[in-house]
Length: 239
Image 1 (tube, rainbow, N blue to C red):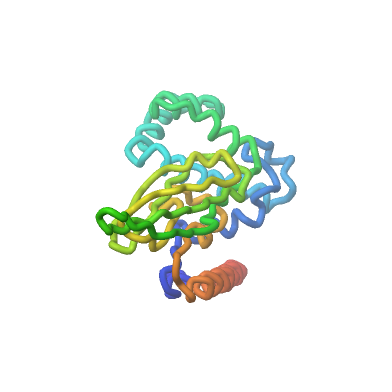
Image 2 (cartoon, rainbow, N blue to C red):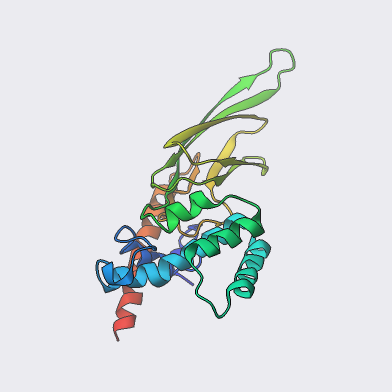
């Protein structure tokens, strides 16, 4: 169990060991680059192994596990014992998922942009109906795209009464404000609550609680422990 997992409710994504390695060379070269043209050996292994793994996991999060299995089996069946191109795999993904995923492959295969979504702020105020005396709450949640990659991401807004509201942000603009009216005040907001985007470079900023004096401490403690454990993993590979 990663050390960061013992600190409060700090989320730990799988696969834990891949993302830190990818982050060392996340902007060096695109996956589409020729191996002999990469910056160095670390950049080569990143675009050959670590980033493709995260990209495929992210694709699976978008299309669903069953569809992803069909994509891979179809790709194997159609191109086994041959020399397929990246366009062949993209075409299979489009056909099986019945989506146009050109934007996905252009950013993740041909580009070096990163994914980093964050909940910027949560605020609310209470309204009282003068006729019935019932209270309602108007909440404003600001979400931010800190990375270069533009893609849809799920947003969950949890309320004090235990209920939640799910919506999707298209992730196109640098930020967006969501305003909702509910019967209970908001508790917290979280982007990508199901962990469908494992290539997100900083999952610690994906959530924000309305009232918590400990959350900044927990987040920084989790970040420090995250880097500490990553250092231990690196030392272990050298022994």
